Amino acid sequence: MVHAQGRSPIVVGLDPDPGRRAALAWAADEADLRRLPLLLVLAQNVPTPGYRPTGGRPSWEEWNEALHATGDSVLKEAVAFVESRGPQIPVSGLLAEGHPAWVLREQAQNATMVVTGSWHLSPLQELFTSAAVALPLIAHTPCPVVTIPESEHITQEPPYFVVGVDGSPHSAAAVDFAFEEAGLRGAALRALYVWHPPRLGVLDEDTAVQECRRLLSETVAGRTAAHPEVELHHEVVTGHPVQVLATASEHALGLIVGTRGHGGFTGMLLGSVSQGVLHHARCPLITVPPTNQ
Image 1: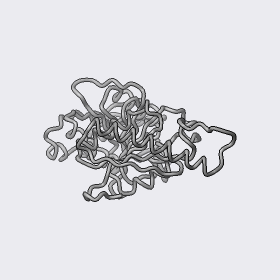
Image 2: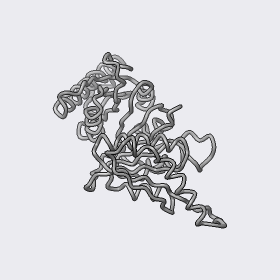
Image 3: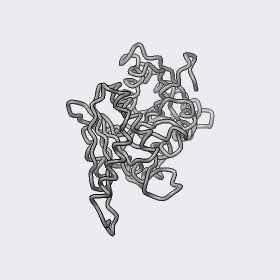
Image 4: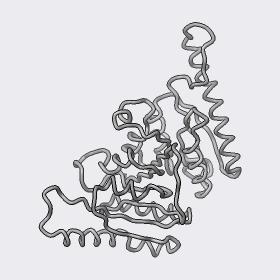
C-alpha cells in the first residue's frame, strides 16, 4: 500500500492487549522521525479477549460480528494512542482476517518497514504457536522487520546501535540501514565483525583475524563520509556471533543484522545468526534484507 502522499508507510502489527504497546510506541516514534505515514494492522482469526458470548455456542454470524466489533475497538484505541504520542503522524488502521504473519507479509510488500512485538518465545513456540509472527516475517518480507521486546529495556547513555558485519552483501545492506537509523536518532554506531573460529582451528589465526578486519573496514568505508554525524566504533571480536551480538547490544537502542550471511546452509530462508538473535536479543532487533530482494 502506497499512501496518497506517495510515501510507503511503516506497518505495525497490533497486539489486541492494550497493555502491550511497546511495538506501537516504537513504530510511532519512527514514523515521526522519518515523516512517514503509519499503518496499524490488526489481524484476527479468533475473537479478541474482549469477546464474551452471551448465550450458548455462537453462530458464525455472531462470531464474525464480535470479531469485527472488538477489532474496531482495538484499532480506535491504538489510533488514539498514536495521536496522543505524535499528533502530526498520519495514521490509519486496517482490520484483517487471517494469520498475523500472512496479513503482515501482504502489507509489507510496499512498506518502508514492518514492526511487531516479541515475547521471547522458545524456538519450539516460535515455530508452532499462532502468536509467533516474527520468524516468518523476517524470512519472507522484502523490507526491514523490527521486532520489539515487551519486557523492560534499559538503554545506556550516550545512545548507540550495534550492527553485525560479515562482509557479505546482506550485512552491507544492514550497515547502510544502521547508519541511517543512528543518524535519525542521534546515536553512535558500533559495527562488529564476529569471528567464530572453526572447530578444528586454523593454521594462522592472526591472518584470519586480519582478513576480518579488512572486510570490516571495506564494509564501513565511505559510509562515514555520507553520515558524518554518526560516531562510529568498529572492531573484530572472537566468539559465537549470536552470543557476542546479543551481549554487545543488551543496552543498545537496537541490534541490526542482515537476514542472511556467511555460515549456515546455502539456501536457508533465514540465516542462523539472524534467527539466533531473534531468540536472544533483549533490545529492538532490526533485520534487513538485501537491497535486491
